[in-house]
Image (cartoon, rainbow, N blue to C red):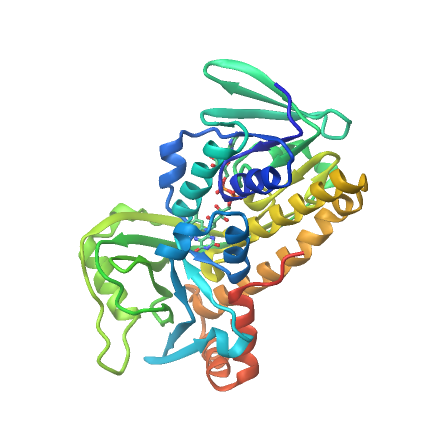
Length: 391
Ligand SMILES: Cc1cc2nc3c(=O)[nH]c(=O)nc-3n(C[C@H](O)[C@H](O)[C@H](O)COP(=O)(O)OP(=O)(O)OC[C@H]3O[C@@H](n4cnc5c(N)ncnc54)[C@H](O)[C@@H]3O)c2cc1C
């Protein structure tokens, strides 16, 4: 099997890259280790930055998002029983975010790819990327019980944090920067209308809580828990009680409770692999970097990477110049590090470490108070949350 760009992974990065390349007249083959149902139902991100929304629309994948997604013009910070709204358009000159689940983004892109794009093979597990530093890279993969080879001009490693692509970069050429956090998020999906019409990020002495939503009838809520927590150890009632405590306010706000349909614990990690290119192999999305979910940046970074890569491959096709491909890693990493910084700042401002002192508490409350009382500090948060420019 032969193609121009071999794409490993059909998450948001791989699927969107295939679509952008199709629009540019560049052929590709996507290899995905899981089956379609699994990929379309994996619960993950839910916040699309303004730039991601614009890219999906331009790629022809925005029709259902515009119909069913929820545009959010702000978010709420809760601390010391107070509420502060951050007005995104007012602080950023018109930018907002969209609540539209990653599952739905993937469904839309898969449908487009199967209808109009090149091959998308499910249950096709990449085993290794070979010859990345030569002219003819190959992906060895297993499909329908047989081992096969995909020969390519370029390989896009879009196979997430646990994929195989990154291993093709010799360790001696790579720099890995990493931080793991001693806590994780216990996340629930609940069949109940959201208790607030915008996301609520709460800092509380008992730990962080986040109120978000997937639709007008489905809530998504999170609690900070120790990293080794077993989700099954929390009863539904305990989860609702704890959410109520951490989201408490001095006014008459109340939390809507309803049936919990899904419960899981997500570990929290910051991770950057540099460079994001080795020869003809380009890493994109979680394959190259991870952020803690507090800043809602992971999916949006994946989108930024593949937009940059598609642009560079198109430039090479049209002009013969590899200039943008050569700049790919540096271009992406600039934005990646901004998102790493933003996600780290949000995480440390809102989560409470088990050994936190009154000094740590005081700093967190001062940071939140600063955002609530200074337009400059509010603007910094709003700009970061609605997204850093791509490219
Ligand atoms: C619980 C949770 C909540 C999150 N919340 C948010 C949020 O609110 N906002 C946000 O922006 N981000 C969030 N993220 C992060 C976001 O989901 C990821 O950053 C995003 O999925 C990255 O997309 P990707 O395409 O790079 O990788 P992935 O989505 O991981 O896709 C990689 C694909 O490659 C496939 N694959 C792996 N190995 C192979 C192989 N050997 N061969 C073939 N295929 C392979 C995988 O099956 C997968 O389909 C969250 C993540 C989690 C886990």
